[in-house]
Amino acid sequence: MSAAPATAARPRSFHAGVHPPDRKAATDRLPIERMPFVDRYVLPLAQHIGAPAKPVVQVGQPVQRGELIAEPGGFVSVALHAPASGRVEAIELRLHPNGQMLPAIVIAADPFASQRLAPAPAVDPAALTRDDFLERVQRGGIVGLGGAAFPSHVKLRVPEGKRIRHVVINGCECEPYLTCDHRLMAERPEAVMRGAEIIMGTLEAAHGYVGVEANKPDAIAALAEAAPDSIEVVPLQVKYPQGAEKLLIDAIFEREVPLGGLPIDIEVLVNSVGTTVALCDLFDRGAPLVERIVTVTGPAVARPRNLVVPLGTPLSALLKHCGGLLPNARQVVLGGPMMGMAQKSLDAPIVKGSGGVLCLDRDAVTQLREFPCIRCARCVEACPMQLNPTRLAQLIRAERVDALDGLHLKNCFECAACSFVCPSRIPLVQWMRMGKAMLRAHEAAAQS
Ligand code: SF4
Ligand code: SF4
Image (tube, rainbow, N blue to C red):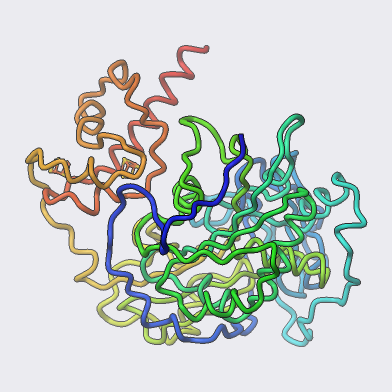
């Protein structure tokens, strides 16, 4: 059975969730600027979910901006392209934003190069077979830019016997502080619509929706102006985590994705705004994914900004361009404050999934003492997946993996809403992560 859009009064939303202060005012009116090219780029081969890309260049080889430097390492993998013209300086282990040392291609930029992408003819996606379309998306290096970095060609490949009727473009950007999607929707609404039409065309989906939280009225107005009849702009309540795929579907269609299922089970596909524009640029301009928009913000950076940043730009160079860290800086997080990842070094580069660089001061990262659970049930009320975080945390602490059966821990998508509301400051999301790792280990042991 397919989903059908809800007709309830707007703005719509989903069950549960939390209301952290959005803290977007520092950058939500700042136009997107272009980050100048820097001396050196570090391109990890694993910038997406799946097999790492395989280098096709040698150390010492000159490369042009946009040139293929690594090919997909398997079906669930995408290509990687040079973000700047220059020379391959090394292929070696480098610090990844996930904290590990992983293989990367290092490019020394040519200071005399124009750094323009070589012009490429537009390709009409409607003239391609489904397989040719998907191969171009894979070779264009396109992944989910909302943070998941899941290869887009895999997501767009609809299995035999299934179909997509509704395409939802995710413009919620519900993480506090981040504004890169907001600015993209306000400044390039036609590209959002063009990308949505490309996806709808290839999937033969009749209806499109762009879900946007109501705290972005300029983006909503710009999108509504650019929208064709087949695409509806849907204002949504400002609530975290509104941008989670299944919750966005719940808000727009008032239908739940079945437990353990996927959006395709109700004939819906969700794509982020950034990815949608990347698809538009790939087909209309021949541009592979060599850069992305990043919000640099927080109380501990001198000049917050929304920037188009070449992939591989080290955080140190990016922050220098934003006036540097302030003396009270204590932590730099890649992503937002709820789901982002704290960085141990500014040597780590911007990768395809990096939508924000959040610079926090002492007040924002003060570690407050944890107290015992007072059974207030706020975490239960906040959990959008209707889990019982306090009960789960108790069992995980006690390593009672056997007792986790039937409590649906796997449905936790680590949004941190439970941790946010807990008055005892219990790091519930960390217990959920640990519990999921314990479950995986338990299942692997059972299979071996
Ligand atoms: S249990 Fe998981 S899904 Fe539920 S609020 Fe906590 S982190 Fe989010
Ligand atoms: S919110 Fe915190 S204190 Fe309240 S029940 Fe959940 S874990 Fe316990």
